[in-house]
Every structure is written in C-alpha cells, then in structure tokens.
Image (cartoon, rainbow, N blue to C red; front, top):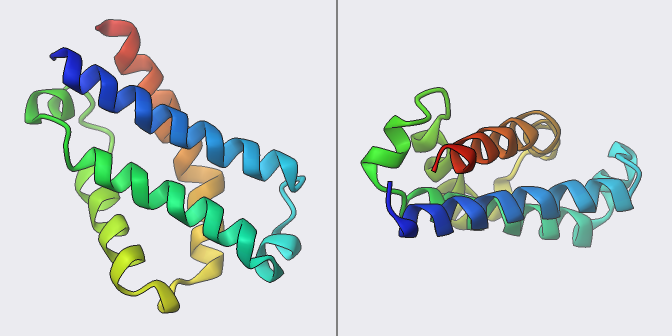
Length: 114
C-alpha cells in the first residue's frame, strides 16, 4: 500500500472521529438527532466524505481489509448525495452508531500495518 492510501485512510479515520465527536457533543441522543437538522447534516456530510475517499482507495488497500464493505460505503455516499431528501433518519443513526465505529477500528488497524 502506498502513501496515497495511507493519506486516504487517515482522512477516513478523521471523518469517523468527527462523527464520534458530534455524537458525544449531543450525548448520543437520538431524539435530538431526529429534530436537529444541523446535527444530521454534519454527520451526513462526514459520511459523504468517507464514501468519496473510499472510492479513491487502491484495490490493494481494499484487499487488505476484506471485511470492510468498501463498495457499500461508496454506494451510500452516492445515495446521500443524489437522494438527500429521502434519507432514512433511523438508518443513518444506526450507521453512525454501529458502522462508523467499526470502520474507524478497521482503518486504525490498517494504518498500523503500513
């Protein structure tokens, strides 16, 4: 894996951390997330950036983490960008709380091996 992949993984990890910070700032409060569009927008923009970056990773880097659903991450970005008004808030909340921490962990592990 080259230095470009390392930079991309580092950026993905940073966006995952931003999401975690947003959730902490709002005390992981789903009711607040449902009614606070700024909170939703901040988290969704991070997901969009993660998807954009995932699409730029080399195939070699993706093969090093076969458990990460790279294609789904990229497809999620495309959905958020092109169907923003149709985003399912409960699904986004689940992604933020389940998938993003797992992605952060995977990126950190990959970065340790480089």
